[in-house]
Amino acid sequence: MSDAEPSWTVAFKTLGCKVNQVESEAIAAALLGRGVAIVDESRARVIVVNTCTVTGEADAKARKAVRHALGRAGRPVVVVTGCLAALDAQSVAALSERVVVERDKDRIAQRVGALLGLDPVSAASPQQGRARFRTRAMLKIGDGCDAFCTYCIVPYARGAPRGVAAEQVVAEAHRLVAAGASEIVLTGINIGRYRDPSEGVDLSALIAAVAATGIPRLRLSSIEPRDLTERFISTVAATPAFCPHLHVPLQSGSDAVLASMGRDYTTAHYAGLVDEARDAISGLALTTDVIAGFPGETTYQAAQALAFCESLAFRNMHVFRYSARANTPAALRGDQVEAPEKSARALALRELSLRLWRQDVESHLGEARELLVEELVEDGTGQRVVAGRTRDYLRVRVTLAAAESDTLSIGDIVDVRLAGFESGRVAEVVSASLVR
Image (tube, rainbow, N blue to C red; front, side):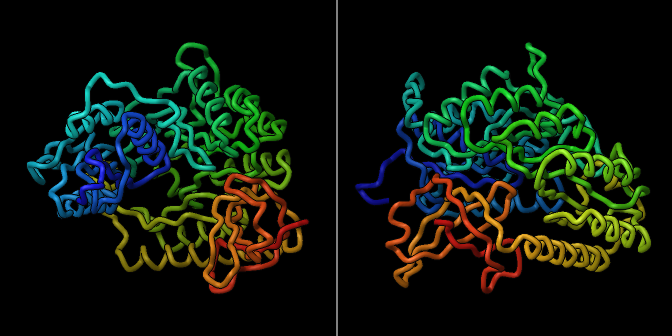
């Protein structure tokens, strides 16, 4: 570390879900407010590893991240938090005497401050603390889950559902708007179950309250099928700020597999809810999660799932090979699908997802979209690349001459016209031109 390098340096390695991301950002904001510099791992005195343990594979990645952090030059202290820390603190702590395990994320900033030798009574500056918010700001509204799907460890790691007070959520939304945020993503674990702990406010009422802050764009990280209620759908449809995109986890397109997963709906029920949402919300884009090779899934059931996903024409599917998580009912089953078969089924689902995405984009080429500018970079040839997402969650890039982009800034919302798939990309990115 050079003489000019600040002595209070912290790095973050965040694994897993968007909730972990927003929690890491909150910790970083608190540390920034106390004068700590957020740096890359090679320069940090303390590295915070926010872990995920939703599957066996995630568990292994978390432990690898901790070991990698421990191997950095300067022998940093590694503070481990997140779901793996909550479930298996003893084995994580045993990795090294330089590992500090902290289950309570609300205490991470305090623990890191103590490790750096900060004054324990120093207060954070809200202005500094907000310095890291992104143009798309994630706002955590709840934690915990009581669904107890047979493959999932989250209810054990994060506990029972609990919502952040609506007053606190709305106050934070106001701060984000004042700081220049153009989009807020309400996130959490199973947020469709949101209830204010004292006021009885549900998710629909919270959406209306956050939209009333004047945020230009508002969306959810995801929502479970059972929470696509008539009240929710009508609220979203009547809220201009709400972006026409919903991520609704399906997990399987086979009723038998859904039942063995402990999911509380059938494919017919799911399809009916999706139809209602599409009828009510103009231009709705639907994305989902699907697990391939769940224990006991037969070849026929895998084919059923593939056909069902195709019939719903998802904009995109996040496909996961089933990975056993110890101490869950699914992991104890004796009818595990062999790894090569799981991979083949996942590949078929991913190929379908790509085909559906291309068909969807092709059906909208030439149309105008509203784009939130999230990146504005030189490409080395005298041109600048504008990148961001549309309201219906298409990733879009626009290449401009430098002079054309002089009036653009990060956080601007501009109109673009969809042109086609970006050269060299197999999925997800659309090329476009600015609408002048």
